[in-house]
Picture 1 (tube, rainbow, N blue to C red):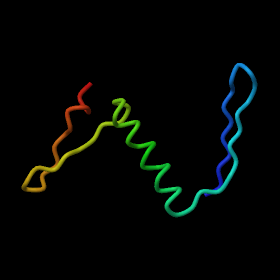
Picture 2 (cartoon, one colour; picture 1 turned 180 degrees about the vertical axis):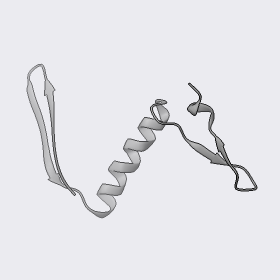
Picture 3 (tube, rainbow, N blue to C red; picture 1 turned 60 degrees about the horizontal axis):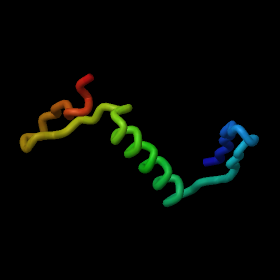
Picture 4 (cartoon, rainbow, N blue to C red; picture 1 turned 135 degrees about the vertical axis):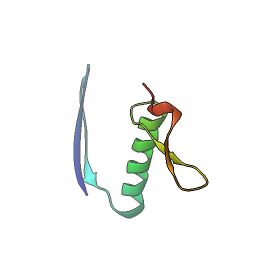
Length: 61
């Protein structure tokens, strides 16, 4: 996956441009999703022992 991301800072721009593949891409996506879950930005679902889907506690707003 080709990525170009620019972050505006007080002292100028921070630019990341590169290609992420395989384990690198999986790590970035997993870290991003875990961060969103941890901060309550995404709801999550849990399965009980009978594989019935239940809402997780962080999904209640």
